[in-house]
Image 1 (cartoon, rainbow, N blue to C red):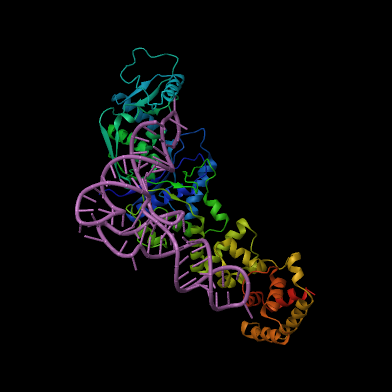
Image 2: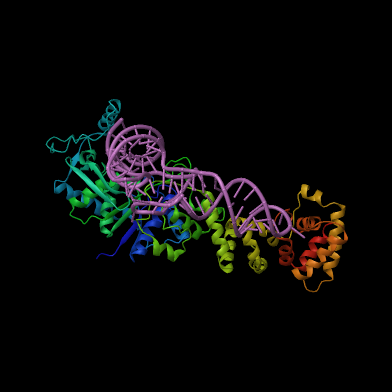
Length: 464
RNA sequence: GGUCCCUUCGUCUAUCGGUUAGGACACAUGGUUUUCAUCCAUGAAAGAGGGGUUCGAUUCCCCUAGGGACCGCCA
Protein backbone atom coordinates (compact mmCIF):
# COMPACT_ATOMS: atom_id res chain seq x y z
CA UNK A 1 0.00 0.00 0.00
CA UNK A 2 1.18 3.43 -0.99
CA UNK A 3 2.21 5.83 1.73
CA UNK A 4 -0.30 8.62 2.20
CA UNK A 5 0.84 11.95 0.81
CA UNK A 6 -1.07 15.21 0.99
CA UNK A 7 -0.26 18.73 0.11
CA UNK A 8 -1.30 22.29 0.60
CA UNK A 9 -1.02 24.27 -2.61
CA UNK A 10 -1.77 27.96 -2.16
CA UNK A 11 -1.09 30.60 -4.75
CA UNK A 12 1.02 33.50 -3.53
CA UNK A 13 -1.29 36.10 -5.02
CA UNK A 14 -2.58 37.39 -1.71
CA UNK A 15 -2.12 36.89 2.00
CA UNK A 16 -3.04 33.44 3.27
CA UNK A 17 -6.22 33.68 5.32
CA UNK A 18 -7.63 31.55 8.06
CA UNK A 19 -9.66 29.41 5.67
CA UNK A 20 -6.54 28.41 3.79
CA UNK A 21 -4.82 27.61 7.04
CA UNK A 22 -7.66 25.27 7.91
CA UNK A 23 -7.25 23.48 4.58
CA UNK A 24 -3.55 23.12 5.29
CA UNK A 25 -4.33 21.85 8.77
CA UNK A 26 -6.73 19.20 7.53
CA UNK A 27 -4.22 17.97 4.95
CA UNK A 28 -1.46 17.91 7.51
CA UNK A 29 -3.51 16.13 10.15
CA UNK A 30 -4.76 13.58 7.68
CA UNK A 31 -1.28 12.64 6.56
CA UNK A 32 0.05 12.58 10.13
CA UNK A 33 -2.85 10.43 11.21
CA UNK A 34 -1.95 7.94 8.47
CA UNK A 35 1.75 8.17 9.13
CA UNK A 36 2.19 9.85 5.78
CA UNK A 37 3.84 12.89 4.28
CA UNK A 38 2.67 16.45 3.93
CA UNK A 39 4.04 18.91 1.39
CA UNK A 40 3.77 22.59 0.69
CA UNK A 41 3.62 23.65 -2.93
CA UNK A 42 3.54 27.27 -3.94
CA UNK A 43 1.42 27.60 -7.08
CA UNK A 44 2.97 30.59 -8.72
CA UNK A 45 2.16 29.99 -12.37
CA UNK A 46 0.38 33.33 -12.49
CA UNK A 47 3.58 35.33 -12.71
CA UNK A 48 1.78 38.64 -12.91
CA UNK A 49 0.11 38.42 -9.56
CA UNK A 50 2.45 36.18 -7.61
CA UNK A 51 4.45 38.07 -5.01
CA UNK A 52 7.36 36.99 -2.89
CA UNK A 53 5.96 38.73 0.15
CA UNK A 54 2.89 36.50 0.00
CA UNK A 55 5.03 33.41 -0.29
CA UNK A 56 6.88 34.49 2.83
CA UNK A 57 3.63 35.21 4.60
CA UNK A 58 2.31 31.74 3.74
CA UNK A 59 5.45 30.07 5.04
CA UNK A 60 5.45 32.11 8.23
CA UNK A 61 1.78 31.44 8.86
CA UNK A 62 2.24 27.68 8.68
CA UNK A 63 5.28 27.92 10.88
CA UNK A 64 3.46 30.03 13.46
CA UNK A 65 0.60 27.58 13.84
CA UNK A 66 2.93 24.60 13.87
CA UNK A 67 2.24 22.94 10.53
CA UNK A 68 5.49 21.57 9.22
CA UNK A 69 6.07 20.19 5.77
CA UNK A 70 8.54 17.78 4.17
CA UNK A 71 11.72 18.99 2.55
CA UNK A 72 11.37 22.62 1.70
CA UNK A 73 8.51 24.27 -0.11
CA UNK A 74 8.02 23.18 -3.69
CA UNK A 75 7.75 25.93 -6.26
CA UNK A 76 5.43 25.13 -9.09
CA UNK A 77 7.09 27.37 -11.64
CA UNK A 78 10.28 25.32 -11.31
CA UNK A 79 8.57 22.54 -13.23
CA UNK A 80 6.95 24.55 -15.98
CA UNK A 81 8.97 22.81 -18.67
CA UNK A 82 7.68 19.50 -17.52
CA UNK A 83 4.09 20.75 -17.59
CA UNK A 84 4.61 21.93 -21.16
CA UNK A 85 6.00 18.54 -22.12
CA UNK A 86 2.85 16.90 -20.86
CA UNK A 87 0.77 19.29 -22.95
CA UNK A 88 2.85 18.37 -26.00
CA UNK A 89 2.39 14.71 -25.29
CA UNK A 90 -1.35 15.18 -25.03
CA UNK A 91 -1.23 17.01 -28.32
CA UNK A 92 0.69 14.19 -29.95
CA UNK A 93 -1.73 11.61 -28.63
CA UNK A 94 -4.58 13.59 -30.15
CA UNK A 95 -6.05 14.26 -26.70
CA UNK A 96 -5.53 17.99 -26.98
CA UNK A 97 -5.59 20.44 -29.83
CA UNK A 98 -4.59 23.93 -30.87
CA UNK A 99 -7.36 26.49 -30.80
CA UNK A 100 -6.92 29.59 -32.95
CA UNK A 101 -9.89 31.54 -31.71
CA UNK A 102 -8.96 35.13 -30.98
CA UNK A 103 -9.83 36.49 -27.57
CA UNK A 104 -12.23 38.86 -29.32
CA UNK A 105 -14.01 35.91 -30.80
CA UNK A 106 -14.30 34.23 -27.42
CA UNK A 107 -15.51 37.43 -25.80
CA UNK A 108 -18.12 37.80 -28.49
CA UNK A 109 -19.40 34.30 -27.84
CA UNK A 110 -19.60 34.92 -24.12
CA UNK A 111 -21.53 38.11 -24.70
CA UNK A 112 -23.96 36.38 -26.96
CA UNK A 113 -24.45 33.55 -24.48
CA UNK A 114 -25.24 36.08 -21.81
CA UNK A 115 -27.80 37.82 -23.99
CA UNK A 116 -29.50 34.56 -24.81
CA UNK A 117 -29.26 33.61 -21.14
CA UNK A 118 -27.67 30.31 -21.96
CA UNK A 119 -24.55 29.07 -20.18
CA UNK A 120 -21.35 29.86 -22.03
CA UNK A 121 -19.26 26.92 -23.01
CA UNK A 122 -16.50 27.00 -25.58
CA UNK A 123 -17.96 25.76 -28.85
CA UNK A 124 -15.07 23.34 -29.57
CA UNK A 125 -14.65 25.06 -32.93
CA UNK A 126 -11.10 23.81 -33.57
CA UNK A 127 -11.55 20.44 -31.98
CA UNK A 128 -12.01 18.42 -35.14
CA UNK A 129 -11.18 21.04 -37.69
CA UNK A 130 -7.56 20.01 -38.01
CA UNK A 131 -4.93 22.58 -38.80
CA UNK A 132 -5.43 22.86 -42.48
CA UNK A 133 -5.98 26.55 -42.46
CA UNK A 134 -4.76 28.17 -39.24
CA UNK A 135 -4.86 31.97 -39.06
CA UNK A 136 -1.23 33.11 -39.13
CA UNK A 137 -1.68 36.19 -36.98
CA UNK A 138 -2.96 34.22 -33.99
CA UNK A 139 -0.91 32.40 -31.38
CA UNK A 140 -3.00 29.37 -30.53
CA UNK A 141 -3.85 28.09 -27.07
CA UNK A 142 -3.90 24.38 -26.42
CA UNK A 143 -7.15 22.93 -25.24
CA UNK A 144 -7.83 19.57 -23.70
CA UNK A 145 -10.30 17.32 -25.50
CA UNK A 146 -12.89 16.81 -22.82
CA UNK A 147 -15.37 14.03 -22.94
CA UNK A 148 -18.56 15.11 -24.67
CA UNK A 149 -20.80 12.19 -23.94
CA UNK A 150 -21.90 10.32 -20.88
CA UNK A 151 -21.55 11.15 -17.21
CA UNK A 152 -18.74 11.25 -14.73
CA UNK A 153 -18.91 10.41 -11.08
CA UNK A 154 -16.54 11.84 -8.53
CA UNK A 155 -16.31 9.69 -5.44
CA UNK A 156 -15.61 12.46 -3.01
CA UNK A 157 -14.47 11.39 0.44
CA UNK A 158 -16.40 14.18 2.12
CA UNK A 159 -19.28 14.99 -0.20
CA UNK A 160 -20.09 11.51 -1.43
CA UNK A 161 -20.76 10.73 -5.08
CA UNK A 162 -21.08 13.75 -7.31
CA UNK A 163 -22.38 13.13 -10.78
CA UNK A 164 -22.29 15.47 -13.74
CA UNK A 165 -22.90 15.36 -17.46
CA UNK A 166 -19.59 15.36 -19.31
CA UNK A 167 -20.75 17.91 -21.84
CA UNK A 168 -20.92 20.56 -19.14
CA UNK A 169 -17.13 20.44 -18.94
CA UNK A 170 -15.69 22.50 -21.74
CA UNK A 171 -12.48 21.93 -23.63
CA UNK A 172 -10.40 23.84 -21.14
CA UNK A 173 -7.16 25.58 -21.93
CA UNK A 174 -4.03 23.80 -20.73
CA UNK A 175 -1.42 26.00 -22.44
CA UNK A 176 -1.90 29.73 -22.88
CA UNK A 177 -1.12 31.62 -26.06
CA UNK A 178 2.24 32.56 -24.57
CA UNK A 179 2.97 28.86 -24.05
CA UNK A 180 2.61 28.85 -20.28
CA UNK A 181 0.64 26.10 -18.54
CA UNK A 182 -2.61 26.81 -16.72
CA UNK A 183 -3.66 25.75 -13.28
CA UNK A 184 -5.52 22.57 -14.14
CA UNK A 185 -2.55 21.21 -16.08
CA UNK A 186 0.15 22.23 -13.62
CA UNK A 187 -1.75 21.07 -10.58
CA UNK A 188 -2.50 17.66 -12.03
CA UNK A 189 1.03 17.12 -13.27
CA UNK A 190 2.59 18.20 -9.98
CA UNK A 191 0.21 16.18 -7.86
CA UNK A 192 1.12 13.15 -9.91
CA UNK A 193 4.81 13.92 -9.86
CA UNK A 194 4.82 14.40 -6.11
CA UNK A 195 2.93 11.17 -5.55
CA UNK A 196 -0.13 12.66 -3.94
CA UNK A 197 -2.58 10.05 -2.72
CA UNK A 198 -5.21 12.39 -1.27
CA UNK A 199 -6.19 15.85 -2.40
CA UNK A 200 -8.00 17.71 0.34
CA UNK A 201 -9.07 21.18 -0.72
CA UNK A 202 -11.86 23.72 -0.64
CA UNK A 203 -14.99 22.72 -2.49
CA UNK A 204 -14.56 25.66 -4.82
CA UNK A 205 -12.31 23.22 -6.68
CA UNK A 206 -14.96 20.58 -7.15
CA UNK A 207 -15.63 21.27 -10.82
CA UNK A 208 -11.90 21.45 -11.56
CA UNK A 209 -11.61 17.93 -10.29
CA UNK A 210 -13.56 16.62 -13.27
CA UNK A 211 -11.06 18.33 -15.55
CA UNK A 212 -8.05 17.12 -13.64
CA UNK A 213 -9.22 13.54 -13.51
CA UNK A 214 -9.45 13.57 -17.30
CA UNK A 215 -5.82 14.62 -17.49
CA UNK A 216 -4.79 11.79 -15.20
CA UNK A 217 -6.73 9.33 -17.31
CA UNK A 218 -5.35 10.69 -20.55
CA UNK A 219 -1.83 10.24 -19.22
CA UNK A 220 -2.59 6.84 -17.72
CA UNK A 221 -1.71 8.06 -14.27
CA UNK A 222 -3.18 6.73 -11.09
CA UNK A 223 -5.98 9.04 -9.95
CA UNK A 224 -5.69 10.19 -6.34
CA UNK A 225 -8.58 10.36 -3.89
CA UNK A 226 -10.34 13.67 -3.48
CA UNK A 227 -11.98 15.29 -0.48
CA UNK A 228 -13.65 18.65 -0.92
CA UNK A 229 -14.25 20.49 2.29
CA UNK A 230 -16.89 23.19 2.66
CA UNK A 231 -15.59 26.72 2.65
CA UNK A 232 -15.52 28.91 5.71
CA UNK A 233 -17.98 31.74 5.50
CA UNK A 234 -17.91 35.23 6.90
CA UNK A 235 -20.61 36.35 9.32
CA UNK A 236 -22.50 37.54 6.25
CA UNK A 237 -22.42 34.00 4.88
CA UNK A 238 -20.06 34.58 1.96
CA UNK A 239 -16.91 32.73 1.02
CA UNK A 240 -13.82 34.02 2.77
CA UNK A 241 -11.71 35.64 0.14
CA UNK A 242 -8.29 37.16 0.07
CA UNK A 243 -9.84 40.00 -1.87
CA UNK A 244 -12.16 41.10 0.90
CA UNK A 245 -9.87 41.59 3.84
CA UNK A 246 -10.29 38.11 5.27
CA UNK A 247 -8.45 37.60 8.49
CA UNK A 248 -4.88 36.40 8.41
CA UNK A 249 -3.09 34.64 11.22
CA UNK A 250 -1.33 37.87 12.00
CA UNK A 251 -4.67 39.46 12.84
CA UNK A 252 -5.13 36.86 15.54
CA UNK A 253 -1.58 36.90 16.75
CA UNK A 254 -1.89 40.64 17.15
CA UNK A 255 -4.76 40.39 19.62
CA UNK A 256 -2.95 37.79 21.67
CA UNK A 257 -4.30 34.50 20.37
CA UNK A 258 -2.02 31.54 20.96
CA UNK A 259 -1.18 29.27 17.99
CA UNK A 260 -2.39 26.09 19.63
CA UNK A 261 -5.70 27.67 20.54
CA UNK A 262 -6.31 28.80 16.99
CA UNK A 263 -5.27 25.39 15.71
CA UNK A 264 -7.79 23.80 18.04
CA UNK A 265 -10.50 26.23 16.96
CA UNK A 266 -9.84 25.65 13.27
CA UNK A 267 -9.89 21.91 13.79
CA UNK A 268 -13.33 22.05 15.36
CA UNK A 269 -14.69 24.40 12.72
CA UNK A 270 -16.48 22.03 10.39
CA UNK A 271 -15.06 18.93 11.98
CA UNK A 272 -16.04 17.07 15.12
CA UNK A 273 -15.25 14.01 17.12
CA UNK A 274 -18.15 13.17 19.43
CA UNK A 275 -18.57 15.94 21.99
CA UNK A 276 -14.89 16.62 22.40
CA UNK A 277 -13.90 20.28 22.21
CA UNK A 278 -10.28 20.46 23.32
CA UNK A 279 -7.68 18.60 21.32
CA UNK A 280 -4.01 18.89 22.08
CA UNK A 281 -1.64 18.33 19.21
CA UNK A 282 -1.32 14.59 19.69
CA UNK A 283 -5.05 14.17 20.04
CA UNK A 284 -5.69 16.17 16.88
CA UNK A 285 -3.49 13.79 14.96
CA UNK A 286 -4.88 10.72 16.66
CA UNK A 287 -8.55 11.52 16.15
CA UNK A 288 -8.59 13.37 12.85
CA UNK A 289 -10.52 11.71 10.07
CA UNK A 290 -12.41 12.65 6.94
CA UNK A 291 -15.69 11.22 8.21
CA UNK A 292 -15.92 13.90 10.86
CA UNK A 293 -15.95 16.72 8.34
CA UNK A 294 -19.36 18.34 7.92
CA UNK A 295 -20.89 19.05 4.55
CA UNK A 296 -22.15 22.55 5.13
CA UNK A 297 -20.07 25.71 5.33
CA UNK A 298 -19.42 27.16 8.75
CA UNK A 299 -19.11 30.69 9.99
CA UNK A 300 -16.24 32.17 11.89
CA UNK A 301 -17.04 32.92 15.54
CA UNK A 302 -14.58 35.13 17.34
CA UNK A 303 -16.17 34.42 20.74
CA UNK A 304 -15.31 30.79 20.37
CA UNK A 305 -11.74 31.66 19.49
CA UNK A 306 -11.48 33.76 22.64
CA UNK A 307 -12.95 31.04 24.74
CA UNK A 308 -10.58 28.34 23.48
CA UNK A 309 -7.68 30.73 23.82
CA UNK A 310 -8.66 31.36 27.42
CA UNK A 311 -8.66 27.67 28.05
CA UNK A 312 -5.17 27.29 26.64
CA UNK A 313 -3.85 30.24 28.59
CA UNK A 314 -5.22 28.92 31.85
CA UNK A 315 -3.93 25.42 31.34
CA UNK A 316 -0.52 26.20 29.97
CA UNK A 317 2.69 25.72 31.88
CA UNK A 318 3.73 29.12 33.22
CA UNK A 319 7.23 29.03 31.81
CA UNK A 320 5.78 28.40 28.39
CA UNK A 321 3.11 31.04 28.88
CA UNK A 322 5.78 33.53 29.76
CA UNK A 323 7.65 32.81 26.57
CA UNK A 324 4.51 33.55 24.58
CA UNK A 325 3.85 36.70 26.57
CA UNK A 326 7.41 37.87 26.20
CA UNK A 327 7.34 37.44 22.44
CA UNK A 328 3.91 39.00 22.21
CA UNK A 329 4.87 42.09 24.19
CA UNK A 330 8.09 42.52 22.27
CA UNK A 331 6.32 42.26 18.94
CA UNK A 332 3.13 44.19 19.51
CA UNK A 333 3.36 46.19 22.74
CA UNK A 334 6.54 47.04 24.60
CA UNK A 335 9.53 44.95 25.51
CA UNK A 336 9.46 43.48 28.99
CA UNK A 337 12.61 44.85 30.69
CA UNK A 338 15.08 42.16 31.62
CA UNK A 339 14.97 42.91 35.34
CA UNK A 340 11.15 42.62 35.37
CA UNK A 341 10.97 39.21 33.78
CA UNK A 342 11.08 37.10 36.93
CA UNK A 343 8.58 39.29 38.65
CA UNK A 344 6.11 38.90 35.83
CA UNK A 345 6.72 35.21 35.44
CA UNK A 346 6.02 34.74 39.13
CA UNK A 347 2.83 36.76 38.85
CA UNK A 348 1.42 34.78 35.95
CA UNK A 349 -0.51 32.55 38.32
CA UNK A 350 -2.90 35.38 39.07
CA UNK A 351 -2.52 37.42 35.89
CA UNK A 352 -3.65 34.57 33.67
CA UNK A 353 -6.82 33.96 35.63
CA UNK A 354 -8.21 37.21 34.40
CA UNK A 355 -7.25 36.84 30.79
CA UNK A 356 -8.71 35.60 27.55
CA UNK A 357 -5.75 36.75 25.47
CA UNK A 358 -2.09 37.63 25.81
CA UNK A 359 -3.20 41.21 25.36
CA UNK A 360 -5.32 40.90 28.50
CA UNK A 361 -2.33 39.59 30.43
CA UNK A 362 -0.25 42.45 29.15
CA UNK A 363 -2.88 44.95 30.24
CA UNK A 364 -3.07 43.37 33.67
CA UNK A 365 0.67 43.40 34.07
CA UNK A 366 1.39 46.94 32.91
CA UNK A 367 1.81 48.07 36.50
CA UNK A 368 4.62 45.56 36.88
CA UNK A 369 6.31 46.40 33.61
CA UNK A 370 6.24 50.16 34.13
CA UNK A 371 7.25 51.89 37.33
CA UNK A 372 5.65 55.15 36.25
CA UNK A 373 1.95 55.15 37.03
CA UNK A 374 -0.45 57.34 35.12
CA UNK A 375 -3.61 58.30 36.94
CA UNK A 376 -6.38 59.87 34.91
CA UNK A 377 -8.37 62.86 36.13
CA UNK A 378 -11.44 60.89 36.99
CA UNK A 379 -9.53 58.44 39.17
CA UNK A 380 -7.57 61.29 40.69
CA UNK A 381 -10.84 62.68 42.03
CA UNK A 382 -11.34 59.47 43.98
CA UNK A 383 -8.14 60.17 45.85
CA UNK A 384 -9.75 62.67 48.17
CA UNK A 385 -8.64 63.75 51.61
CA UNK A 386 -9.95 60.69 53.44
CA UNK A 387 -8.43 58.38 50.89
CA UNK A 388 -5.05 60.00 51.25
CA UNK A 389 -5.29 59.85 54.98
CA UNK A 390 -5.96 56.12 54.82
CA UNK A 391 -3.10 55.58 52.42
CA UNK A 392 -0.72 57.41 54.70
CA UNK A 393 -1.80 55.29 57.63
CA UNK A 394 -1.34 52.17 55.55
CA UNK A 395 2.09 53.26 54.32
CA UNK A 396 3.22 53.87 57.87
CA UNK A 397 2.07 50.40 58.90
CA UNK A 398 3.81 48.54 56.13
CA UNK A 399 7.06 50.35 56.66
CA UNK A 400 7.34 48.50 59.96
CA UNK A 401 6.72 45.19 58.26
CA UNK A 402 9.62 42.80 57.91
CA UNK A 403 7.75 40.09 56.06
CA UNK A 404 5.64 41.42 53.22
CA UNK A 405 2.99 38.75 52.68
CA UNK A 406 -0.73 38.43 52.44
CA UNK A 407 -0.83 36.97 55.94
CA UNK A 408 0.84 40.06 57.34
CA UNK A 409 -1.04 42.56 55.22
CA UNK A 410 -4.52 41.28 55.80
CA UNK A 411 -4.73 42.17 59.52
CA UNK A 412 -3.34 45.62 58.83
CA UNK A 413 -5.99 46.36 56.25
CA UNK A 414 -8.75 44.85 58.36
CA UNK A 415 -7.75 47.00 61.32
CA UNK A 416 -7.69 50.12 59.19
CA UNK A 417 -11.20 49.32 57.98
CA UNK A 418 -12.46 48.82 61.51
CA UNK A 419 -10.75 51.82 63.09
CA UNK A 420 -11.67 54.29 60.39
CA UNK A 421 -15.22 53.22 59.86
CA UNK A 422 -14.83 52.47 56.17
CA UNK A 423 -15.49 49.44 53.98
CA UNK A 424 -12.94 47.55 51.94
CA UNK A 425 -13.57 49.70 48.92
CA UNK A 426 -12.57 52.71 50.99
CA UNK A 427 -9.05 51.43 51.26
CA UNK A 428 -8.80 48.97 48.38
CA UNK A 429 -9.73 51.39 45.65
CA UNK A 430 -7.27 54.17 46.55
CA UNK A 431 -4.46 51.66 46.98
CA UNK A 432 -5.27 50.10 43.63
CA UNK A 433 -5.35 53.45 41.88
CA UNK A 434 -2.08 54.57 43.42
CA UNK A 435 -0.29 51.35 42.60
CA UNK A 436 -1.67 50.58 39.16
CA UNK A 437 -3.33 53.71 37.85
CA UNK A 438 -6.57 51.83 37.30
CA UNK A 439 -9.78 51.04 39.14
CA UNK A 440 -9.71 47.53 37.76
CA UNK A 441 -7.15 44.79 37.87
CA UNK A 442 -5.83 41.93 39.91
CA UNK A 443 -6.72 41.42 43.57
CA UNK A 444 -5.27 43.92 46.02
CA UNK A 445 -3.07 41.38 47.78
CA UNK A 446 -1.78 40.09 44.47
CA UNK A 447 -0.84 43.62 43.48
CA UNK A 448 0.83 44.36 46.79
CA UNK A 449 2.82 41.13 47.00
CA UNK A 450 3.92 41.13 43.39
CA UNK A 451 5.19 44.68 43.67
CA UNK A 452 6.99 44.12 46.95
CA UNK A 453 7.36 46.35 49.97
CA UNK A 454 9.85 48.87 48.60
CA UNK A 455 8.00 49.53 45.39
CA UNK A 456 4.63 49.73 47.16
CA UNK A 457 6.00 52.15 49.68
CA UNK A 458 7.61 54.22 46.96
CA UNK A 459 4.48 54.46 44.86
CA UNK A 460 2.24 55.24 47.81
CA UNK A 461 4.54 57.96 49.04
CA UNK A 462 4.30 59.76 45.74
CA UNK A 463 0.65 60.52 46.45
CA UNK A 464 -0.43 63.10 48.99
C1' G B 1 -29.25 31.93 -16.30
C1' G B 2 -26.77 26.76 -16.26
C1' U B 3 -24.24 22.87 -13.33
C1' C B 4 -23.21 21.05 -8.59
C1' C B 5 -23.51 21.21 -3.24
C1' C B 6 -25.70 22.35 1.50
C1' U B 7 -29.98 23.13 5.46
C1' U B 8 -30.40 20.59 13.95
C1' C B 9 -30.49 26.23 19.39
C1' G B 10 -27.69 33.14 17.57
C1' U B 11 -22.73 30.26 16.46
C1' C B 12 -19.75 25.41 16.17
C1' U B 13 -21.77 20.75 16.47
C1' A B 14 -23.72 15.34 18.63
C1' U B 15 -27.49 11.97 16.92
C1' C B 16 -25.56 6.91 12.09
C1' G B 17 -35.04 4.94 12.42
C1' G B 18 -37.24 4.62 18.62
C1' U B 19 -33.48 10.30 23.00
C1' U B 20 -37.33 14.58 27.90
C1' A B 21 -32.99 16.08 20.56
C1' G B 22 -27.04 16.14 23.99
C1' G B 23 -22.53 19.29 24.46
C1' A B 24 -19.61 23.82 23.79
C1' C B 25 -19.40 29.25 22.93
C1' A B 26 -22.37 33.45 23.36
C1' C B 27 -26.75 35.18 26.21
C1' A B 28 -29.97 35.70 30.92
C1' U B 29 -30.51 34.95 36.25
C1' G B 30 -28.55 33.70 41.03
C1' G B 31 -24.30 32.48 44.26
C1' U B 32 -18.92 32.96 45.54
C1' U B 33 -15.22 36.74 45.00
C1' U B 34 -14.17 43.37 49.39
C1' U B 35 -12.91 46.13 41.99
C1' C B 36 -12.99 43.92 36.94
C1' A B 37 -12.73 39.04 35.86
C1' U B 38 -12.55 33.94 37.32
C1' C B 39 -15.33 30.01 39.43
C1' C B 40 -20.10 27.44 40.53
C1' A B 41 -25.39 26.73 39.81
C1' U B 42 -29.72 27.53 37.03
C1' G B 43 -32.38 29.11 32.68
C1' A B 44 -33.95 30.44 27.78
C1' A B 45 -32.68 28.59 22.93
C1' A B 46 -32.99 24.08 17.23
C1' G B 47 -34.52 19.62 13.41
C1' A B 48 -36.67 25.48 6.85
C1' G B 49 -41.77 24.02 4.72
C1' G B 50 -44.73 20.20 2.35
C1' G B 51 -45.39 15.32 0.76
C1' G B 52 -44.16 10.19 0.96
C1' U B 53 -41.63 5.14 2.95
C1' U B 54 -42.23 3.01 7.94
C1' C B 55 -45.44 0.47 13.67
C1' G B 56 -42.23 4.80 14.29
C1' A B 57 -38.76 9.83 11.28
C1' U B 58 -34.13 15.05 12.78
C1' U B 59 -32.29 10.52 10.60
C1' C B 60 -34.29 7.32 4.10
C1' C B 61 -36.81 9.29 -0.77
C1' C B 62 -39.28 13.37 -3.59
C1' C B 63 -40.86 18.48 -4.19
C1' U B 64 -40.63 23.62 -2.64
C1' A B 65 -38.05 27.49 -0.24
C1' G B 66 -33.52 29.52 1.40
C1' G B 67 -28.16 29.63 1.30
C1' G B 68 -23.51 28.61 -1.11
C1' A B 69 -19.70 27.24 -4.85
C1' C B 70 -18.35 27.08 -9.86
C1' C B 71 -19.25 28.76 -14.85
C1' G B 72 -11.31 32.75 -17.00
C1' C B 73 -5.60 32.12 -21.63
C1' C B 74 -6.92 33.17 -11.88
C1' A B 75 -5.72 29.54 -8.72
